[in-house]
Image (cartoon, rainbow, N blue to C red; front, side, top):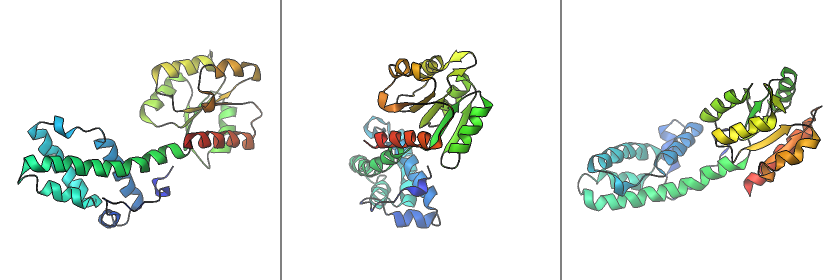
Length: 236
């Protein structure tokens, strides 16, 4: 999903006109930097930092806050060198305000809809069919076996896995159990390409609201219907 799809709200503590002006109106880059700011500092404990660590963090955030339009936070950090003890508390409070404004924006974006799909499949014919159906609307990644899939989970954020019933002499359930053991897939939706008689066994392994099944021959309307259902559940 492109960050350009996010509608910037009217922040109370962030002047978006400043940030957009600094980045020559590059809205997508600005939003990405805001998200990175949240990821980097959402769990920071200012009170646990040494004096040197505090000054380093303050220096970095001061530069970022000035370019991103976080005026009040910038002002506090400019004054920190003059009276560190008093401004450290103000720094903590102002940073918390910023993070509280950013958190619902990007949490909503991440949970809104499926954008990246991982195909775990070694059938060339099935891969081609699924890419033809999905490639126009989603980012498609491909793993030919469970090990390639694990590497992708280590580096990418996967919203949906479409898993073939058999991979390198392993049944789909074995591949799923391997991923469940070695990767964080709890929030990942899953579509099994399998036979109908195996569906109940698979449902026992996973949250029923995050799992579905398709059979060959693939029907484009059915696959996209399943993805739409997943999206609706992710919004709840």
